Amino acid sequence: MRIDFYHLETTPLDKALPAILEKIYSTGKHALLRTDLQERVSYINSLLWTYDPSSFLPHGDEKDGFADKQPIFITSKRDFNPNQAQYLVLIDGEPVQENDSFERVFYFFNGLDEDALTKARDQWKSLKFRGFELHYWQQTPAGRWEQKD
Image (cartoon, rainbow, N blue to C red; front, side):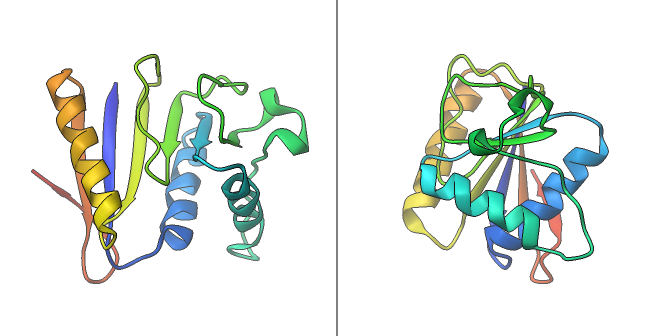
């Protein structure tokens, strides 16, 4: 499993997340977005409908129904993959679980939040020790993503 760490420094999650989800959607693969709080599920659901009036990014959560048909499904539940997603997007410090079996994981963390930074570092160390393929992406001052070694 490939795991990409996205270190947010200049662009907030609300701006960076939709852009990455658009790229994921364009691949034709399904994504599961997991957060730790049900309130965040509702917030992200609303965000993805409103972030750009000229865009359409199909997604949903449990309240919307048709979970198995959603290209992007948002949840706070672990061990739950109703849309048979190949990609997992983690926000709010959600860890990669032992039984996660996705092709690729996108792990977003706020580099300006010391707790989030510590959690991300701990995740990196744990996943590296377990032999996962890890990639680290940092934002440039212009807000673009740059892969670091």
